[in-house]
Length: 109
Image (tube, helix red, strand yellow):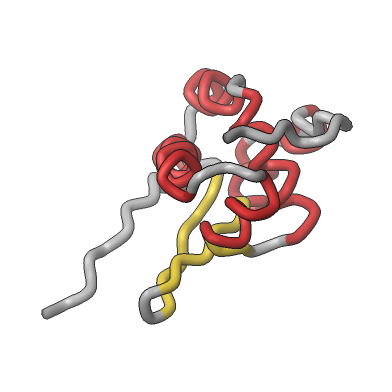
């Protein structure tokens, strides 16, 4: 059985209003901070770092991916998430710098 394709919007389809609406959630902003600090991470690692259930984190990661903020890479049964730094910087220069919260990530349980 072929692996399921993970959809990512093309860089040219990234929409600033959608991105801002998506990262306006404090949990998603915390996810961005973690990915910016640590680079690529799995859902399990991020869930441990943020102190939240994997199911909750998975929902937020899907929102970020569908908005074009993150990308997901499959390797076996693991999924690795990372920021689309190059695409975002090319399309909206300085956006990621502006989104740095500078506050500790909230623990969600």
